[in-house]
Image (cartoon, rainbow, N blue to C red):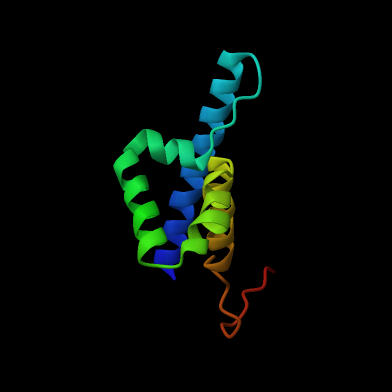
Length: 106
């Protein structure tokens, strides 16, 4: 449970950072400048993006790359980190023990 919570918080923090980066880039450009996941991946490590595309199209299912993965790569980068981060933190949140005796305030 704690691993899911930690991963969720890491994704959430990365998503917030990407929101800030997109807002900063938009303010500098004077217009909305979206930061797409594919462009971010290409800027960070283009060789791995090319390798994933080649492996997916050659050894896995070719239609997996074109309509599915490209749709994900064309999404805003902050969405692909922030939304799963929120979902994971909600799924793995600490819950009160239902079977523990309740403490009443007097």
